[in-house]
Image 1 (cartoon, chains in turn blue, brown):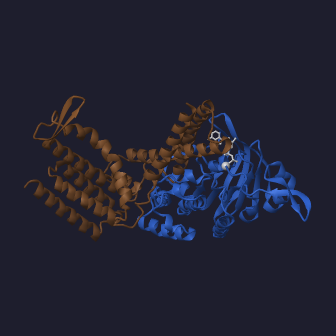
Image 2: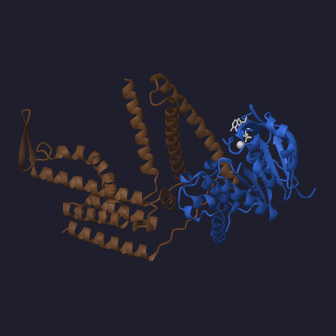
Image 3: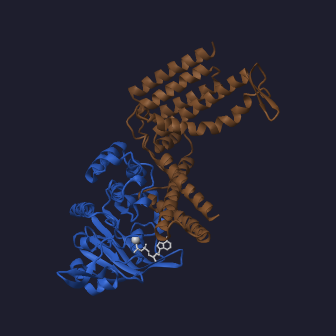
Length: 270
Length: 278
Ligand SMILES: Nc1ncnc2c1ncn2[C@@H]1O[C@H](COP(=O)(O)OP(=O)(O)O)[C@@H](O)[C@H]1O
Ligand SMILES: [Mg+2]
């Protein structure tokens, strides 16, 4: 009870009041948990993550954060707002959006500067985080000149430097080569072992088992169709096929044609 | 008509790509040369000083001297001289010829005749004063354009933005410039990608009408994209604690090298002043 971080009850959201994006969502996230949100494109994953980061607020329903009800008015209070931003960090699906500063360095230190961190502390963290993600050489480059993998790392650095307790990631491995994806998964596992709560949306079924204890499956009508331990969900072929997470592949094998479900890697990235 | 249209389309794409390469590439600004290592604030101020001086120089040889200094600085800053000359000389005719050429003739600048031309019964006399004035003008334009180009290619765009900010140019203006920069980049990128996509699907021979439709659709798409981009960038800023007044890190430092540069500029300016008023 006391270690609940997020508690969503019957949450509805629609864009501009007419494009429904969430239709009655119930989710509970405990401290230190690993959560994965999976579902086809447009099933509402990003919308949910933006709600969790208090960037948008539900039309209907109830959200509790750290045991208190979350209200839009609370964010008019600077202290409350800054405190929340320090605790909860979101890494956006599209790094081109997250990276809006002229250089990588400025992007990474944007958060700490806004949150009033000391200059020495910022420099120290900048050094640590760029070393950890191996992006020291890009600091003076413009973010939109980097490759997708480099952009994702910079986007991660710009949120991780704030050192939030709760880390929300929107398709962090989409479009990455297997090795870079591996590094990111390892980093998430490491951060979780340090006590951070990790919430990830993904299409990448390969990584689900490692990055989640509990999986929520979103359906095309923007509802949660099923939730449970990751191993159980991954076993449910029919469910995964119904929600466009695997597709049937046929290929030749020893002169015979095999037909079997095939896990999607990056086919779904938008 | 169709051919022309295609040609225009092609040229526009090429021009945009050239613009993208030349305006957005920080290639030279990232090199470890002399000017790149200077404090951007000092560099900007001293270059402004040069530009103002150039306006008041009456002697073509002093201008020539400054031009040589400019080329030398370019060389020390690891800039390919051909690239630099090409970049600067593209602008010079634009600025100078239209103003300078008429001035060499006697109708505009009376004086001692050097040469007379007889074009279609119209007697044109080139005067010494006119020619001299025109050369001085061209030289002045050349030198100032060269200094301006040198400053812009050896300084990263964000540093120029930061200099603006530090010189107390209002925040909102600097942010707007930064955003424009992003939009233009995004715009060129979309045009390039669309063009490639069209080409890969239907080849370059698009019917004029459908070409128009594609372009119209893309402009609508671009508006929508930039609106969404704006909204989402704002979310990304909020998420990291933005409260409506961006905080920037002023981490410029004045080093010994900057002090040496400042002394050098003082000496050059002194000499220029002395010779100009002799
Ligand atoms: N800015 C927006 N304006 C209008 N509709 C949107 C916007 N963003 C998302 N949507 C719609 O909301 C639904 C859920 O989108 P999203 O949360 O991005 O899904 P996912 O991340 O699972 O792909 C989709 O139908 C999408 O078209
Ligand atoms: Mg999404």
